[in-house]
Image (cartoon, rainbow, N blue to C red; front, side):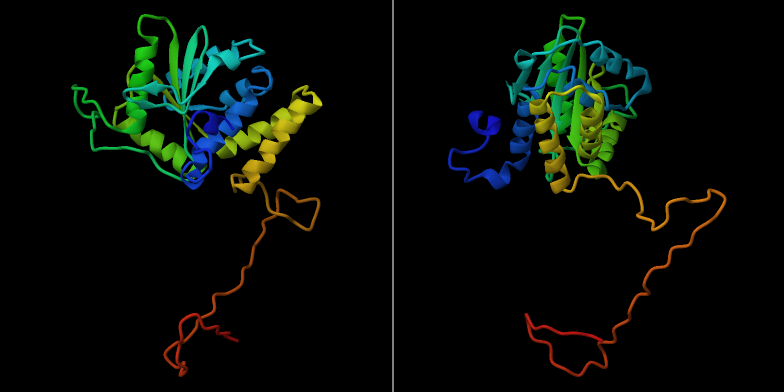
Length: 263
């Protein structure tokens, strides 16, 4: 709904396949606005991984936020000449920019690398441009600026690590990453630990089902047929052997879209 209101999805939905990330962004953060910030969103943001350990203090700034109604603190796809953050959260002591990815990669990149020189060349890398957006927003203030990259686990860390090592993120902007898999774990914890009313619980549980349906669930454990495992024992797991198929001696013509069974 939010994505369509903001014009990211056409009124007929004709471009929906190209805007799945925008739809997920609007659905997820749009619905979280209906739940007090302290009950859900703050707990999710606190799972953000910070690239530099000495910047982890920013999580303490987030933890200190004490807000219930927070619709006035969130903006979707705010325009800037440098680009468009998916979500912008503005609070008294911190500004948080969020870039959301699901199936696609970064919208822009280049070969700029400032890791081995004193000069600072501006990069067209999407996260680099977004860090410059945040830098402008905190200019003349004492606010912290945090840029969070949300994506599936297998792309989340590598993309942020590369941007950090290339030294293309503004010095006064903190870069962090948060995978959808971690968000799913956080949502499950919120359901079990937070005092949610039945409406808030319904929203969170719907998101849990949605993320699992999108295949964003971490592997948790093997399903053993025994209850007690002695830690001093070792276990061996046997798998089926690979089957070699000899096509050389196969004397039948292969036709396109045909069906063949090998015994």
